[in-house]
Image 1 (tube, rainbow, N blue to C red):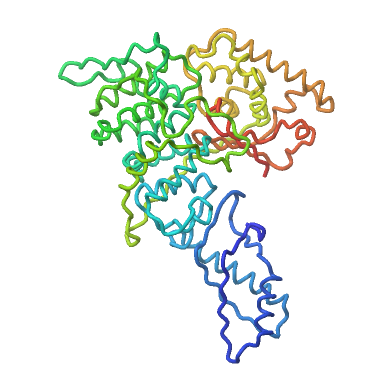
Image 2 (cartoon, one colour; image 1 turned 135 degrees about the horizontal axis):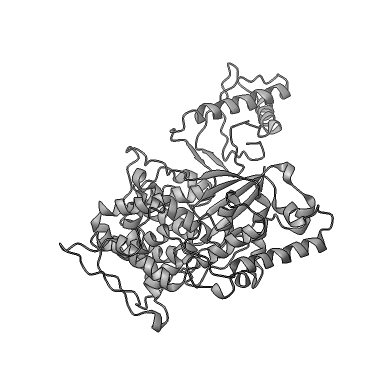
Length: 518
């Protein structure tokens, strides 16, 4: 953390002296602090997007009005650095909050406000998430939800974080209790991983695709059929198992939140990667069997219930800068329902223990083909992804995922390299790819190779491989992927072509892709 990153909102000084200080002495003290500026604290902050927030910091030092100003400035910098380090040595201190980035802060705001906790509002206000201090937890939650509606690329990472955090924090239970169903529908309807299931559940499809959902017939003994009788309830990922076990212990949640839970469980177990409606329906049915076995009422697929809470029911459009996006309009009736639900959030007394921290679920993997990810941004050109998928679009098992995996292979990425996983949004496709995908992928790779031959003849041949094969590190979270490259990997020839620009949120991929040099 450098002096350019350090901000002091309010500096209040107390000078103690055996003799009265003159106005000139006081002016000299102010000039000493101003000339010293904000020092480099040399803290262990590896991520430039990390936030370290300190509510109150006591800094003590000796100062002589007639002493050298430069020496006094150094003493001030050392005293400030020592005070910050001492406070950071106690991470549980109420005056210190540390976030890896703004997304983690918003997740924490929503989670703690849902539990009724208000003690961190000073930090959220300083980050710009709250418009005031000392507000009720329900108002803070409302403002947090409003910010999340303006950040569509953050929704799936936050949902997955709350699911994974449920065993240690109770985050999912708390959010189900206080966040209105309309908000959940909006969340699940805007994420690529869950949108297909949400459309089936709350919007239905064309008439010939909506015969209605049939509850499974009870097996002998009156118990609902196991999901293993149709699609095996995964062993696909830990979070799907967490959801199933968590729901088994809370059957009343299945009764009151069955529709939301079925869509969420299906998306966590089998994130949609361009699967056909038939496969989506089978997977949603399997999730419903798990939910129904815990006490949920039969679903009503095919109901023409509008996707609510101000979210777009169509695939979210890409925003050039989602940081500053404003919340979407919320119809009055939905706003009233949301307000009524949030008024039920009680404030937690400050003397009670703070809620446990949300766990970080990231995974770091090396890659030797970091440059292959530069081409994901190129897939945003009109018609490129559709041509790559060809006649398989919307059919078969995870057709989009298979098309992207084939493209990564055509670019030269080995099957064991982590870049393949990043190319498919962090989730490997299931099922068998449709015929013709590999040939379409090779054709697209050949077009890019020809383009490089034309616009960048100075690159070493084969030019496509020169761009794609370079070392890096990948950080994976559900719905969020970061590619980290060392500064010596910066290539002005590639920069000139705009290939390594940060793609950001890629709605069709269902995740955010960040490219960072360090």
